[in-house]
Length: 111
Image (cartoon, rainbow, N blue to C red):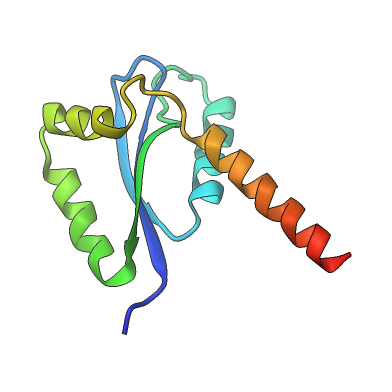
């Protein structure tokens, strides 16, 4: 039986020096957490808070995929990011729009 969906993600800082690879079941919440943490940090340029890569994956494969990506070299991680996000844009902006769109649909259905 397939479980709940998970997200494997990569966050980076503004100058792309640091990577944070993680696993979550609520990507919007996790990204928001790191963005708030960055806003409160003294070293804003070093804190990874820009979502540059994510993939949705089944719970039974999520941990192995996380370990796989975590073991990649820096250049392999960069290739993975560039495959889907050539300009390294912050994908959390799309997540916010998707969440707002879903909330709007739910409100209209309830009305």
